[in-house]
Length: 350
Image (cartoon, rainbow, N blue to C red; front, side, top):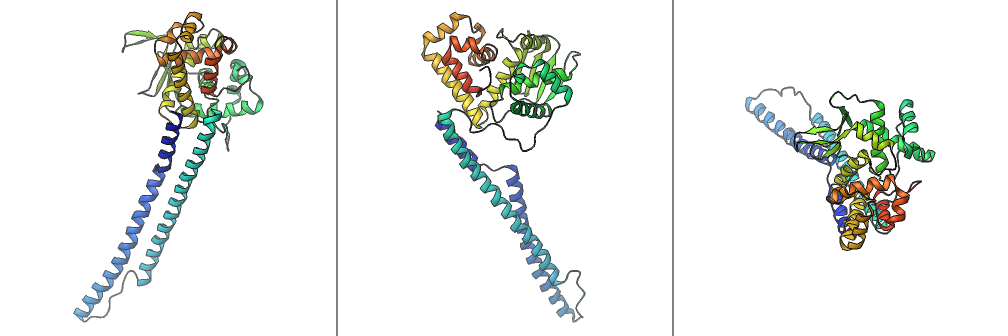
């Protein structure tokens, strides 16, 4: 399974042609056509003028462009053509290099089950002082990080905030606290990923309390809508799950886990591949080991909602992993290890 994904990813990356390459390719084609047209027009111009002058027996008429001008223009367009070809070659070599390095990393991940590296930010963004204060006062995961990883966390959080559109519903006002705590939850879950922005989320809607859905005629605490790229949360339920850290109920973690799962299924970066592949291993383990699955159900450690379907299983076990890691590791060490591998969670407390 893993090797099939690796080969698919490498082949796709090697032959991929991005919008930049398409644009430059079109410029090169049109520049080449321009050179040929100028050369043709120059020759045609001289032929027709000489023909009419000889026919009329009149002195040669002054030309707007002299012969050298045509060659200068043609030379300029030819220069653009050569430059375009050179840039196109550089971009192609970049693609080849990415494919080779990506293949090497995939080979490394086959054995290590984690990306070769996670953090690389030539230019780091920073939060405002009041935003940092909210993190320090209300987000325990952030406070357990060392100073270097706190800096990485703040950069990722600032990037996530810039990328997402927060909207309040039913009169709910989006404050800095709302944006920081919701976004920090996403950054926490993807802090072991290299690609952390969760592009399948564009909008985050926040209701003051559980909201009524006209689709299924029921009240909801939260949901993820993949078609609209929208995550929806009830603030009352979000903050309750957030402030009670060890009850294994956390609306924000649950809904972001759904979004991360969906995002990973549709992307082929190294973190997504490991996430999906490891979850598939967990599903197969529970399907083949009936005793383990029954033990998990009987323990009541994982709430019964997890066994609704695979998607809910993933969201619930991630909730439990984040909020009760020590107990999880003691009771179900194999499942715990799979979740730690999925999220690449090598942080204090895990």
